[in-house]
Length: 411
Image (cartoon, rainbow, N blue to C red):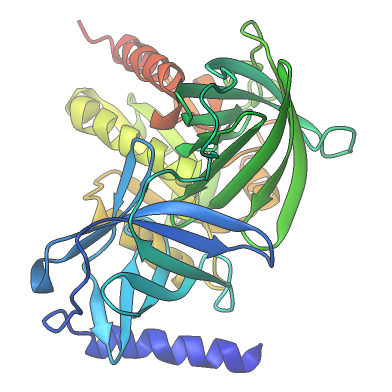
């Protein structure tokens, strides 16, 4: 494993200093089908799109309504390097003619050894095979009460949200700590298959359909496999995200950490006096955190001049302050974020709970603390249900906008 780590590190360094874009191979333009080899028997399919040629070539990963435009491809020797824009992960590919690529996904958020083999072939019809003889399929539209890891100490609940068009299904699962983001798949006469690949997570879900229930397995990356079941239940919902994390005995929010330059940052301070302040507890490796960060950037753009401040405290992958700060700085620069960024430390909920002892506990990245002009906490929101949740996301955006206007006393 040490040898593999050295080889990958050297390869990344080579890409960073000598990559070319002017001699990219000719590839068929259009939709491709990718497969991550999670195990000897399990493949996670995803859609891959190639547009343009040469220096104008672009490549994207697609999950339902989500299109992830990868950074411009870079050619080094016979390898094509593709970097995911929001996460510290890459695709390293080799060409096999105009219609086939093979290589691996390298997820540096895990470690420098975390690779999963993949193959991408030209052409895309359905994400999963559905069978040629089937003409009718089970109807899955709606809400499904879902139990993950049923019957174990790790059991937790979720809500499955599905939108079905014939044999094609889009949707997601909502849990108390956030959603599974954009998932896409297919239904057969007796089974449902869903997958999502966004550069941070690789989710594969398979289930058998029995009446109004489903029984399945859930794979995340190459190391984790669990069970789940679900039943159609339009009235089921989870506890409200504002009820899970709370202030203990009306204690004030106080903490001392370092900013990106290593300077001591103490809250509260005069900068935030008489301001409405959101404190976001997050990590750049976390897809739900990135969805929330994009929304908070919109809030900041709209309301900063009227008194809104945002402090984002990052808990990061890596073993040093310098690594943590570099990851946060990269996010800040990539998305032109102008609110305040603080380094929390390692990506650990226990550490975050130590820093924010006025809360009962931190159970999720992200967690957002909303503080009024008077310095008192008005609410704490656990997790984030992003654009893949449809109405959940739309309702939260509308309610939060109105809530901020109320705190700011915007007419």
